[in-house]
Length: 556
Ligand code: GLC
Image 1 (cartoon, rainbow, N blue to C red):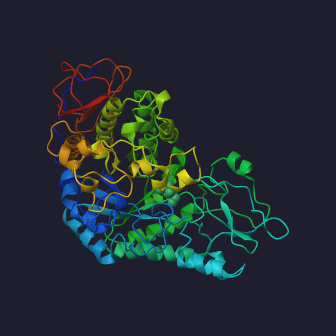
Image 2: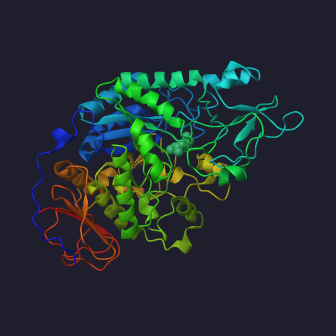
Image 3: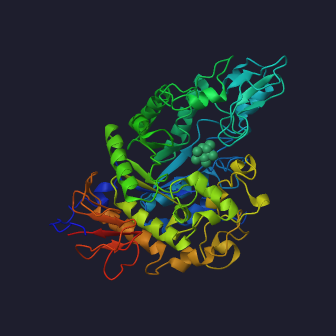
């Protein structure tokens, strides 16, 4: 039984007007909604979502109650990696619209009080980027090749790769260009890595940051922010085994090197030249202790710890404690996230046992996950409980499109319909990330469930119909209603960035915010007596008590 009977004052008047205004700190406790534009809404019947599609759904976003959107890449791209292979950093893919469409969308979002964050992909361009084409057309040692990481191959004619490194997506990370040289790609071969020691590369990205800032974007999400600085010698490269054994302590040849922060210090100068200063969030899969350095210059660093955690009170408690401390060290706020375009959706992850390994979880779906106790109803209950907990935490909450509908991961996609390079580069082993990128269902019936008139570019399962926006709109107890209610209440209750843990039974986590806003999550304990009538719960109470896999918000 919880010991929560104490006086809880009403929150001070620190509400939307003070927390979400145009000051430099608007982002610190923002609810940010990630849009994967090609799967959001298709306005021109080509099966791909687009920017006018986003603009047409601004009312939906406003009513949802989020503070900002983060758009995954919408730049020209041959889609070798879902748009993270960028041909031109300062333009819009013609299939997704034009720069004028971008401006119109941004204006509509701003009018609705929603900030705009765009994705910057600085580690690599696409192989169709003008600079890479120039590099291929230029000889060894040329200035054009110096913008990327070309090295001589091994063997008499350079016919062997400079090293046996493996790319993140599987397969080798060096590809030959036919003249004895090879180029580095930490990801797909269509994603050649930039050489960040080259001043033109540095200058060009400053230009890109200014280009979008001038167009009114409020912030940036920095793709693989921990990979830009590298130490790749011209001969005698370390082996894969040596790389694997090397600690991530700031000196690893490829990841999370200390010098990367020089780059971001220069970016910060650009951000600070705007009013309010632009914000950036680093996608850096580094350990918690090395995150503050990214947050110090960029603003925030993603913490993926809850995303990788088992659904247990103890794990959540220690992760929350550590991340609040680490963010404070940087003078930043932390970032909570359960789902994004790279990982199995959390409603499905939480239906599996164990719950805390997103990569393995995706692949359990390969064999129907029979060995992993799939319980979709429990998965969704836990996902809703986790979200309500997340939205009560100090810091920003990053939400991924479709989680507000309780969408599951889609596992039934035919091989020939799949798009993700991680699937093709790891045949039979990795299902890839398409299952969380299936177009959103807006209506319970009709072509592609209202996504667009020409159908969806990845197949929507039948169960998406009952999960569609229209099917859940205004329905008490629906996941969409829960998100709307929670986001609205969060605005009302939002307060200073700290929490105090409250005594609770094993398997239960309870905390209060400085204004007395309380969140209690029963992970897996017997039903808990609540000290007062809750303001909101993530699911029904059982005989007035808080059952397992349920969160309640309270106020005195
Ligand atoms: C990031 C993106 C992912 C992409 C990769 C390479 O991790 O989130 O989608 O495939 O970088 O750009």
